[in-house]
Image (cartoon, rainbow, N blue to C red; front, side, top):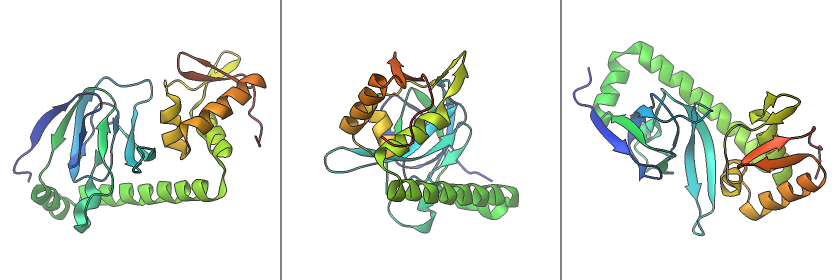
Length: 210
């Protein structure tokens, strides 16, 4: 039984660190307590980016993505400090469940506890793959994987439907904005891609190496 639930609203770019559920759209989140997103204007991709971690220079790495309707922030259940932050990608409405009530929900609802375990296992799997990419793939290979995995068929072309800035792409592949800019410029020169309204259009299969 949940004793109290907070409802609050986030403007685009707002940051916070608690626990919540996502019910309707994208957020960029970090290590939290428990949140649930009630409503947002969703991008064409119904997922939101998670766990942005930044260094002292402000360079950011986005560690994972989480779908709308999901919850986040449960990593603080071990009692350790939060290791990342959360920022709304667009205006959003969230529910916040106090930690004591969240722990009671785990103890009193086996179905929820099993779902939480499955989600945590999936996130460990995602982070394992992320470590592999960062350790064994160079920035270009990570960019190519990023573009190929997100591209959808559009006539004879393939297009990444979300509008990403070069800095946002860099945060998702673990590179710098300057390196992403160089890669896009070289691929455009080679006739592999073009950028239209911040969307990457794949004109042909990307080369294995850059």
